[in-house]
View 1 (spheres, rainbow, N blue to C red):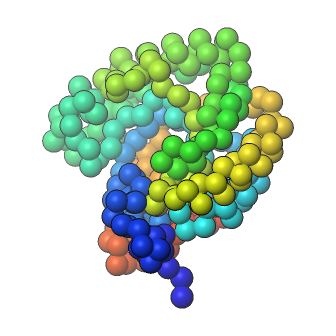
View 2: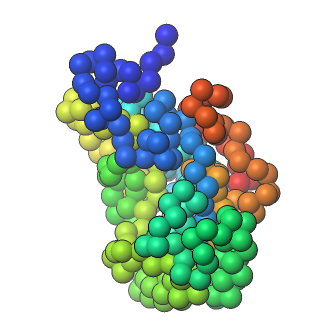
Amino acid sequence: MEVSAAESSARDGEESDSQLGPHVGTRLWPDGSLRRYPGNTVVCMVERDSGIALALEEAADILEAATGHHCAFLPASSWHMTILPLILDERRIEEEWTRFVSLNAPLEEVDRFFTEAVASTVSPGEIRMRPRCLRTYDGILLALDPADRTTEAGLDSYRERLSEVTGVRFAGHSSYEFHITLAYDIVHPGATEQRKISEAISKAERIVGDVDTFVLCKPELRFFDDMGAFRLSRNGHGASSQVASDPTVGLQTVSRDQADPSQ
């Protein structure tokens, strides 16, 4: 019988509640399945079958084998680099909301506002990035740097314009680290698991490091109902089929191969 990461930690004598990752209860359920968590964001998607996508798929296989039940890996079709995070429907606080729309506005109204605001802003040219390192941060991510000064300047200018027209500016805006999230922690790994993960990261980095630079898809406003699918329309296809709105219904950890490749 399979056990969840939280159950496994508890059986090992750990306090499972204190070991849960910070995204459990928001992005994830304790068993690693994706939780409904609607919002919107401006991102550059990773192009399927590109050199970086193929390298990340190979790297993710290595990392997933090393982490066992401790991490929930995201489907490859959801991989993206965030340009500007916008809002989360469940986090309606002034510091994390647009100043142009009421905190009480329905999500559909917020979506319409962002659609018009982002469309009014000219996106930069080619977004060329360079892998910096794979690392853990409440999960596993690939940190990225602009590959050249043109990309760096274009991203900086675009992010400033987006912030102005959307009315969204988070703390740390100017020091935001570009990255691609591969997985979220279900539980924080113990010392033994962390050693295994560190060894796997070293191996996976050699694969990703073979990609010198890569070009991402153009920046787009994307809508999500969960972390498994970032869509061009809120009503395009509905929420992804692997999402459980209640922890007792339809529990299933998302596999990277399960998501619709057209998303």
